[in-house]
Length: 182
Image 1 (cartoon, helix red, strand yellow):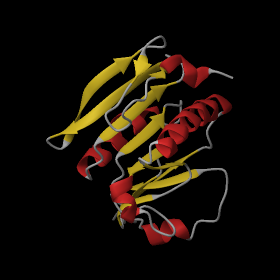
Image 2 (image 1 turned 60 degrees about the horizontal axis):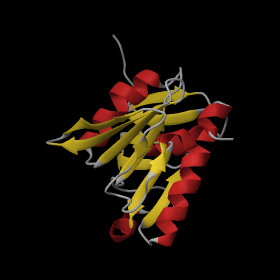
Image 3 (image 1 turned 180 degrees about the horizontal axis):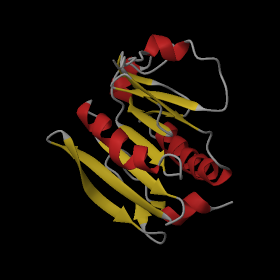
Image 4 (image 1 turned 30 degrees about the vertical axis):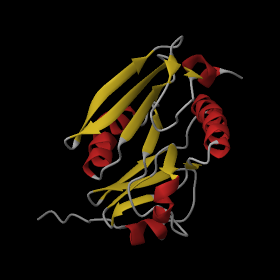
């Protein structure tokens, strides 16, 4: 007889802090190691540019990991970067986000590639996150997905020399290459 344990957000809160990242999908605990420096550099560069634009234009709030999005008691995800529009700031709780943000960004790594390409996008779409960006640090690409009828469709596949634009950030034109700058 096989007994399956389902994890909840309450269980997640009881895990002592360490260098791992813990997420839950449909009650299944997912553990990944801390990101590598290149991953962090990309998130840092993207964060700086988005935060500046979002603050100047009073568009909302930018957050980055670690921050839990509690979609349900059994599905808790921690994207690398999160954007919440100003008119939806009510989803920001004291300890987590309690609803779908307007954008989530994931940076691929060896340990998270399957999770970021297959598992997480299905959950983000299921719970209504309108836009999902997937950054490949090795391939130096950015894929932009937008939700349509409960699933993501590829809206743009950007290479290193392209420019990133999104209706979420009117007036922002971000060179993809800037994500890799030192």
